[in-house]
Length: 174
Image (cartoon, rainbow, N blue to C red):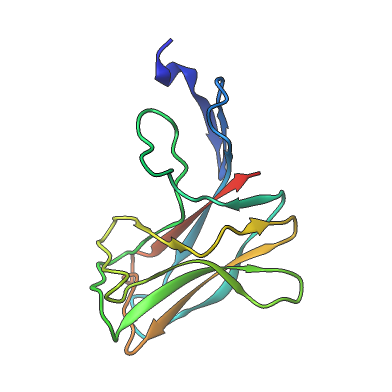
């Protein structure tokens, strides 16, 4: 049996189950949460924090592949953002997309982010950019994930009038 034949999987909606007959992976992708984002193509328009997911089982944010991981092993990707326009990195006019965890009555706790400043870099139309993961957060049943897009200076558009941006948040069951 080839390596490809050893892996089986099925995807329905935002649920993906991976079966590993050899027991070589320790986690299972349980949810890919697609989050549409739009600012209407307006540089100064931020995207207010809004709820994108309520956690229904204990899990953590997808961390991406282990260093040096190659081959046919299914690789869990970390959270990514794709902009509907190219965005040039700027130290003064940029955007920051942040994924937060909230618990009942609690403050937003950032878990991942990307900023289009000089350090964070530019975005290329249709090319996913990784969000930096801020710690190894465990999500409990009932936790809420929110997303916000802040703008600094004059801001930058992350979408056009007709093409939005998209954020993908993978969760691993643990």
